[in-house]
Image (cartoon, rainbow, N blue to C red; front, side):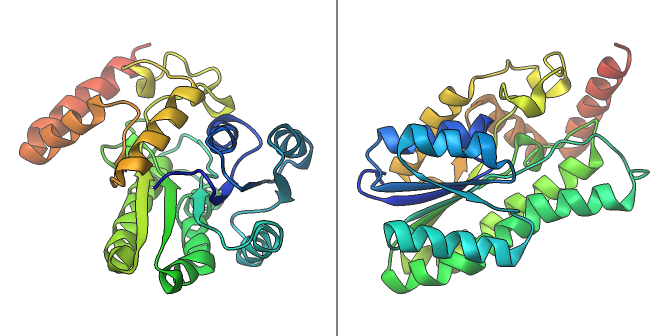
Length: 255
């Protein structure tokens, strides 16, 4: 799919990845881009910059997501592309408080569910549409420092797989975005963290990869191409891969 002439919605768009995607969609000639986030001030600046629509929205609230879709449809017509991008990064293992587990699950899983409920059936009825769900390389591999993040990002990948299977024969394309470290507010102060072992990329580089992958209509969006080889190694010999990840965890624990 090419973005030119399409209407798009991007959540988590006040900064970072979401802002970069919104800007790139606008440059590609989208007929309209609705940007959504909890932070209305920075969000409005993004909308003003690209001539889009700013909608304050909590992506973990289904009614708010439905209202976002309604506002975008009223302004731009049927939604062609929905980028479910909101997320959070909180390190924690099994000992993490339940509210942190719930926040991760609500943002990394249920937000994608709410987006799909709101737009996927309409896309299928029209015979076209594109869902781009932001997960992480941690959803394909893991995160050695955060169970809350890794577990819910795995679930995000699984849900995207389900959507691709359920809607693929109805003209709805699905991609899941799985980067390693991207220079955003979420990674600030973590430049030497485990996710940056293959380098930290700029959001604009990621946006380039998203556009290219959408044009090819491929499922995996991998701004760090090394992730595919890591995934192959993981599935080829799971125990060896786990041993290597233990060594990686130990190396960063010593810092």
